[in-house]
Image 1 (cartoon, one colour):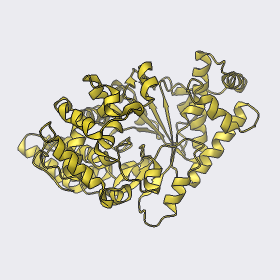
Image 2 (cartoon, helix red, strand yellow):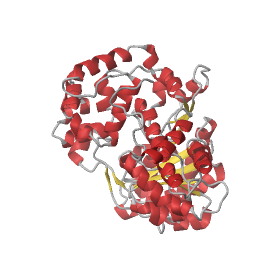
Image 3 (cartoon, helix red, strand yellow):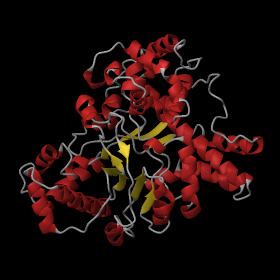
Length: 464
């Protein structure tokens, strides 16, 4: 990778010289370490087929909801960015990004795009209306080079493990092709994502559940067996985790009679909101039970109101930048699950939160007692430099550094993966350096922790 004048070599490191010197040394230890990405959204087909990226606007704008949501908030219409099937000159969409680039100052997405433009593409000047065409031309020319296709970039970025996110009934053909291809050194792992199968209010539930049952009796027991069979298939293809996203992580010990009745009503399109909530609670509880049996790591992402603006959902579909965080709670919601399975040696439960108050109040105390619980890294709006610092301060005093998941990039924006991991490594180096400077840990201890945060910690949490 190259570097440019607008990328400060000590970015994100402490301002005072003495602490910065410590942080610089810690960062340099891990800057080139392999990337472990056990939760993300890059489609497996991109790698299996080595799909070239189309153009700079698609790469940086249409494919990244962090970017087009802020442009939308600034008055840019979705159709001007090519969203919702609108046809647009990609250079014009890029010009809109450049026109509004000052609005991204201080944001995580602005930081990542600067990093990618500078270090990956060698763009010499910061983006602006005056430099937009030159930057576009440089990126567009690079995308024609085979060295900028997914497989070459996996090697260039040093990505050792990359997890995708997949429908439980995906045939995993792309994963088979990758696994059988000796030219791909990266471990590309499927992730079982059953949201549409556990939530009767999910728009794809009826279609998904019907396909899953495939003519079996519509009983809860048969439904769970069908899910377990698909989980086993994912594990055979190298999968290590199940990822569930829900607005509230409620769990209930299964009342099979009640679950049967709700499932049948849901398949008829008649389940009430209260019944749907109970079935989700049964589903999360049973997902943990199945993890005690098959060993798959269970990750839970909660506290987001998906598709907050119905007209935008209708116009451009899901993942349109209008998913909004809400308050969440784990301690009472997970109690039935943790009472029954929290000490089981097979269960690894990685809990993510959008509500920062959960970090110190619930996640760190839970992970500080239950050996099955791991603290999910700052996620989505929180996977940013200052949020990471707040996360470290909120969790390490209770649970230390070793009860976490390691950094999670959680992205479909493939070229930003190294930028995001580099940001996390710099942020953690800054935090550790402060502890050393304050005499709270030794330099030797900080060095070990820095090494482990990018290697041993994620390997442990995700059973890599």
